[in-house]
Every structure is written in structure tokens, then in C-alpha cells.
Length: 539
Image (cartoon, rainbow, N blue to C red):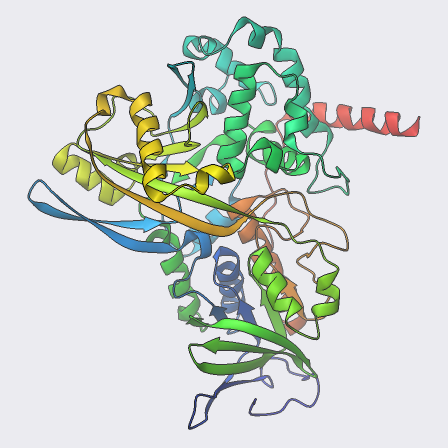
């Protein structure tokens, strides 16, 4: 039941829009009615960005989040307690470490506008660790790329000036360098997020065929660290989009900052506080169950425990992960038919292992990517950039490492104890000085809400401008003509969805900040290779 009526589309969409919030828990029924203009479904980064953009423009949004915690994959987790050296220590768990990369202009601007996470820590050094045949090889690679003397897209040649990196390669790798470079320059010829290009079912595995072993391992490790999947799982379009946005077109795209605390405390909680400070409302633990078309917009039904609620607004912003959006739209009669014909990207499960050691590693790199005979795909030494781990290190001399495991499925299917053991073995293999120093460990299994990223576009893919009137969509998987990925894509589409809703409401809309253009040489090569594409297509 919804109290109040809206017989037609209001002429003043702000003043005349009535939201009815009806609690149907027996035996009594109660209703709380508020003036609202937009409902945002989903409280991850995309939904929070959309809600904040709406609130800043005076739209007073209502945000619904099914989980008890806001933030989605950035949500803070349970607290880990540890007794060591006669003291009690507390660490906040999370879904996994995230960085703010060089091209995250919209996310950085949103945080800066509200003074959020201003004390970020710049990344300095990242190792490539490769295990093969009982040996472990290591080279610092991150600073060589972003500080390269060579302009993009030649900046990876800076790695060849590092003796430690050259020692990682075999003669076959050096001979195969031109072939690898030629394959990677596909990212200059194609822009999957800005062009309608059909790569079919091609995966990255086919691109890597014939590559020399060590270079394949290095690029695969970069890809897994960024896309959280194995080569056979990653669509070719998604990989090319990843290369373009994060590294191929600009050296400074590979620069990034760490958050000084867990993502929930550093970003999500302050964003939520900013929304409410600007007149928005947030309801956590509210699972949307149905959206219904009304004369004045949409009615959203949701449940909180045993209580059922409903609200109406002229604009709705859908900010769910792909599979949650599919379920909601399929369960809603007014959207089900169109939703059934859409393409929905799959989600990926991930594992996160944290290990506490009584001493710190000798390596100066704060993070690394892994390849070869290793289970973990990357790792981060938290005492280098997070306050609670830094305090632990200062007091005890110890260290905390977070390691991510992206598969394959048979590895993630192993018991928690097995995952911990394999991660610990990998870390201690890379850092023999830590053998016998492990004092505590945890494992976290993230549900398959991380998108298996492939460039999306066309009428069968959900976009910011949805097929349904007055519904806008946002999320890191939603189609929109901007090259951003992941956190930045969530923020970009959140701003774009809010701008679309605000335009319908007659309110000033924010603008999406474009990505920084490629460096001159990369831009010139991009134009040349696209010209070759056009010539070949005409023949």
C-alpha cells in the first residue's frame, strides 16, 4: 500500500512529488511521507556518487542499500583483534585494497570537494615477483614505467634500462619483444569503450598465443592485478580498454595513491555523511524488490527485515552490480520483458588473505604482482601506507601483508586453511627472511560482484540512459562513452546518471570530467593505426 496519490506527472517535479514510506509490519500500519525527487537503489560508490550529486543540486534523494554497510566492494569489514607483545591491536578488514589511479579525475574531484581522504599516500615502488623451477626472481617495475624517459607508448622501454628486469628475461623473451609490442599496440588501434566494435567471444588468451614465457607472465600478472581474472576469462575488449586507460596512452596514468585507512572509513563513511548533510536520506538494510511505473514516475518497493516499504519519485537511479540489477528488473513487471533480452556481465569471486609477521620484509617496494608458480596474484604491505598497520609496525617491528587470489575456480574452492597456507608459502618464498615469523592470519571470500569486465555497448547492454523513462543507471559495468574503468567508472556513471535525472527535474546538472588526452606520440600513433584500420576495411 502506498499513501498519497500522484495522478499525473507534476508540473513542479520537486515541490509536488510525494514519497510515501509505508511500514506494513503487523499488526499496525504506519506511514512516513517526505518530499523527495529521486530514489537511488544501491549504496556502492556509484550510488553514493549519484546520491551526492543529486543532493548537492538540491534534489534530496533517498538512497536504499540492501547490505547493512554502505560501500559495496569499498565497504568496511569486521574488526580483526590481535594480542601481541602484551598489547591488544585492532585492524579493520575490507574487501581488498584499492588505489586511486592517475586518471581517476572524477573520483578525486568528488573527494576533494568534500575534503575526503586528503592524506592519501603516493605509490612509489611495485615489484614483479616470478617463481619458476624452484627459483624466485624479482624486479621493481612500477617506477620504471611511470618515470620512464621514453614517451608513451614507448615508456615500457624504461624497464629494459633496469638490470634487475633484464635478468628476469630469457633470450627468447628478448627476441620476442617486437611481437609482444605489436600485440599490445592493438590498444592504440581500437578503443572498445568509445567505439562500437564487436570482438565476439575472443579472450586475452588468444592474444597471448606464441608469446615468450616470461613476457607473457609479466603482462598476464599486470592484467590479473587490474582485471581480477585469468587470460581465458578476460574478454579481449576489456583487456584493450584496461591497457588504454591505465597505462598505454600516458605515463602518469600508472601513478596511483593509497588510502590511509580502510575504504569504508576513508571514503564511504564521509561520502554518506556529505549526502545527509546536503539533505539526502540513506536507509541501509533496505532490499529493493520491485520497481513499478506510476503516472508521476516510479514506485520502488523494498523490505527491511519483516517490514515492507514503498516510495514514489519522478526519477530513479539504479546503482546495483550487474546480477543484482538483473534480478530486480526481472522481478518487476514493468521492466521484465526488456531485461530478459539484455546481456548481463558475469561476476568474479575473489579471495583476500592477510598475514601478520613479527618482522618486516627487506624489500623497499610497498606492493607487487606475482606470476609463475605462485597462488597469489598481488600483495600489499599495509604498514607502508595504512595508519593502523603503520602503528603496529612502529611498536613491534612487525608487518602486515594483504594478498589477493583471483582464481582459478579450483583454487578458490579450497578450504580457508589451504588458501592461507598457500598465500603464506608464496610470501615467505618471495621473502625468505620471514620464514618462521608468521603470527596471525585471516581470509576473506568476496562474493561474485566484481564485474568480469568487457566493453559494453549497443541496445542489449544497460547504459546510463536506460530503456525505461526516468530510470538512469550507474556502476562500473554500465555503458557510457568515457574510457574510465572500475572505481572511476563507477564515479563517472554516478555523476552522469545524476546529471540525467537532474536535467529531467529542471535542476543544474554536474559535468563529467573527461580523461586526460594521450601523450603526443601516443596520439599520433593512435591516429595512424586507425587510418590503417580504415584502409584495410575499405579493401
